[in-house]
Each structure stands twice: as structure tokens, then as C-alpha cells.
Image (cartoon, rainbow, N blue to C red):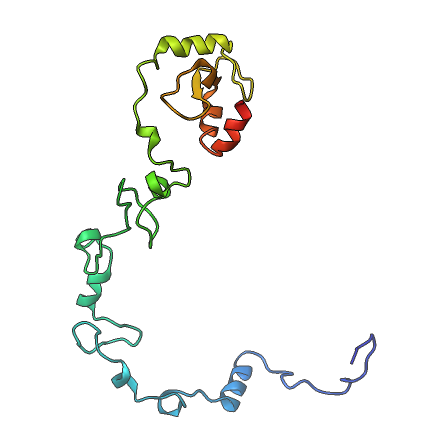
Length: 202
């Protein structure tokens, strides 16, 4: 039902609280809505006897919302006397990475960096990166490759590039045709999708 201007539905009716102010209005509520205190309350359960006992020592509590008595509650407060290792329920704190000791999230054994090391990495190739270079891999050879390529990265064209990259990723193959000059950023990029980069430099 929509009301419009000049609606006459409530004309002539006297509001129930007309003339009531302050104490008169308060007395009206007390008379018509009596307070339900103590045994008159439908939720009454016997009073103080229902407070209960301390969950640690079993001593009777003195206030309703409490779960522990005052001496037992001091165990759970973070104070200088019971902080961290001295706390009543200390369990070792936040977990740490088993490899590097870095603080990590719960339900994890390693941090994000250590979880991708070695055989856990998607680019693991049997540990060939740990193999030593041949005797031909010297600074004179690397300098000659940089001068041949004019210190220019073969991927992005950046000048003053100093990294020398093995095209077939085989350290013992130091043939100049298997070496190329890259900048440091592009050299780290070639560690992923190796088949793509091998075909790229051919």
C-alpha cells in the first residue's frame, strides 16, 4: 500500500505516548514490561553455583565469563617472565626451513627457494652444472668470443655484455662455434626452455 500526500488513514488517532516525557514514559515501560531478574528470568540456572571451576587446577571461579583462576591465567599471558620458550604452552614457535633455516609457513618443510633445488627443480638435468670446465675454458678464450661478438648480446642487442654462453649446454665443448656472448639477464633466461634456445642459436 502506497501513502500519498494528504493521506487520512491515521487522522483522529491519538498516539500511545502522547504527553509522556521522562519519568512518566519510564514508569510506563516498567509497568507494562517488568524486568526479569534472578529467578524471574526464564534462563535462570541457579545463580553463582553454575559459574564452574578452573580448567587447570579445578578451583571454584569467582566470575562467570572466566575459564581460569587468576594464578593459572598468568601462565597464558605474554609477559617478559613467560615469553616464547618460557611460556606454558610453547611448541617451538614458527617453523623453519630444514635446509637454510628461514622462517616459513605452517605445513611446509622447505622455503620456496630450497624446495626447487637439485632434483626437485623442473630443469634438473642430472647435475651437469656441477661438472668442472675443461682446461680450454680460460679468460683468453672468453675475451676472444666477446671481441668477436663486439661485446653485444645476441638476444637483446645490449652493449657491454660480458657473459659467454655454451649453446649446447655442454661445458666440455669449448669450440668457438658453440660459444656466444650474452648479457647477464639473457644468460639467466637461457636456463629455461633449453631446447628452444638451442634451436634459436643454430
